[in-house]
Image (cartoon, rainbow, N blue to C red; front, side):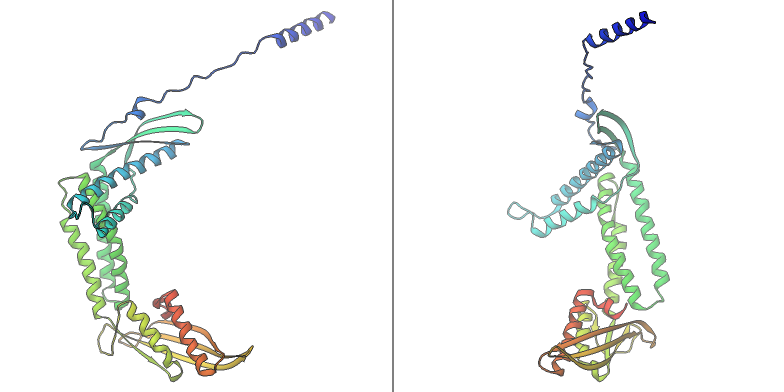
Length: 329
């Protein structure tokens, strides 16, 4: 047993006295495909990206790919604009920036991951490829589906009240503006593509909205206590380009305002505590929207001024929240 202890001690001393050797991990060289990625061709786009993980690297590569498309479209648009004194007009420049911004929203899902490598801790690099024709076809499918859904919804709403239909046309017009920029991308991806039929459809939606807006009119009725509130509602409707006019048509609506006012006082001020009920009726007399508001006006100069303060506060509410919300639409 004593002999075994001596051997163990000798082994430990020998281990402590041995010189420690450093392990050197050779640094990975950045691959050629990342330093000099393939150039995009007439049929394919290439992009590289890096990130803390593979998913982030791919996301950054896709962003770069979309940015390349954006620059191409902006350059194409700029070439078609009239250049004055060696620079684009402010309007043209603003449009170009907006187009680039909208193009950045395009999502690409049908890419191919060609290369992926981990260079070190939290350092991944990738090379992706995108087939232009596949992206073109996916975008065309998306646009066709949007127009199909638009036509179905327009048919469903054709017999509803004019305000709902107008709101629908406005919403679709805003959405189709984005699709118009997608058409620009499709033109870059496929030189033979003609966007004429799609642009006509977009123009038709805008015309439907503008023509319907011209037909819609409002009249405003109130009890005596709410007479000072009528100009506020009229102003809010006019700001949305609605006509204020008494007429008989299926596009006419009437806003009714009823107020109950109680006089009170507090801290030396005269108060006008006002309960306001607003209802909007269509040409058939059916209520399509309603709202109830409680507004207290105040003044140090008497009850009449306190009532006018109610109108002032209602006007502030219309400007802040919008006339549609005040009417309960």
